[in-house]
Length: 347
Ligand SMILES: NC(=O)c1ccc[n+]([C@@H]2O[C@H](COP(=O)([O-])OP(=O)(O)OC[C@H]3O[C@@H](n4cnc5c(N)ncnc54)[C@H](O)[C@@H]3O)[C@@H](O)[C@H]2O)c1
Ligand SMILES: [Zn+2]
Image (cartoon, rainbow, N blue to C red; front, side, top):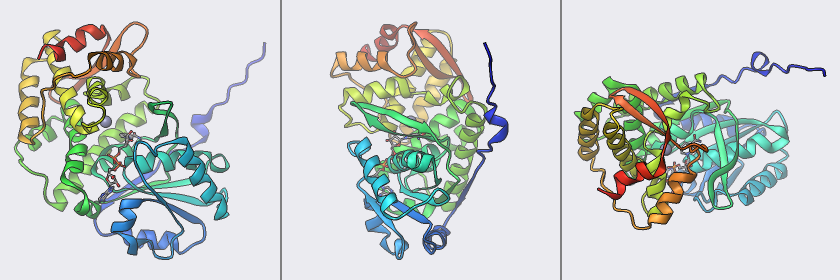
């Protein structure tokens, strides 16, 4: 038998920059729009709020929702790129929240086997989380993010001025992920945030976003395909996804992750894996920012199914991430789903 090794890592450099600031994106968009080599796909709400940014730009207006995070929209976007004669050396730019970035990144990965992709995230969640790390995709067969690709952008422009029009609920939806980063990676950030009551100030927000991007970038550099370290980012997500499903998605992702972080910590404490103090401190910071942390399950079967079918669940059990102490994340494998959910059912 012959064997040929295709050593891709050494030949391809996927590095890119994330620029974070305020008031700079207008020029960037106009610059890119002035060539016929760039096509924009813009969240419809963002387009309506910031129409003047896109004058002279070729824009596909995308009505972003989980329902439209769908393979049919990939086809529509690809058809639009083709109608604009976009070539292999040209660029697709996503402007919108995490849904838009995920969908457009996936379309960019497919068009002519991959064209340049620039991401301009406009929600807090997409600024601190989804625009970093190269996961793209759509929902399929009723399963979230079932079909997709790892496809890194050429660069990311984060302009915090977009946050001025974002509803408070959406800001807090993203902020839960910030608390997650702090709890598992950055003790100083955790205690700094714990002293705060609100998220105001451009310098503060830009610093916070920068720190979150650094943390996520650092993890993704070490484990792009989620074989190990990247699993830490799932803190709060196993129970969180079950809460989302159980509430029929009336509870937004970040709010569900806040609940999930609390219960997964209670579980880790009960198992002797985490210091009891972690649960108290997490509770305090979540309540400071007005997150609900107690959840009463309405559809036990749905909840159980979600815990069991979680992407991280292997044949031998469920994997959760937790903070052993504040700032120090760890993974625990082979948990019995029944044991984990008991902690929620009995609260
Ligand atoms: N790729 C990843 O690594 C990753 C990580 C986390 C989440 N995600 C995905 O991200 C998605 C959630 O992203 P999201 O929370 O940004 O949701 P979203 O894209 O649906 O945006 C939320 C809402 O805010 C509106 N909006 C966007 N920018 C605005 C602005 N500046 N002003 C006013 N309104 C604005 C949108 O129109 C939408 O109604 C999920 O589908 C999730 O699967 C991906
Ligand atoms: Zn999340």
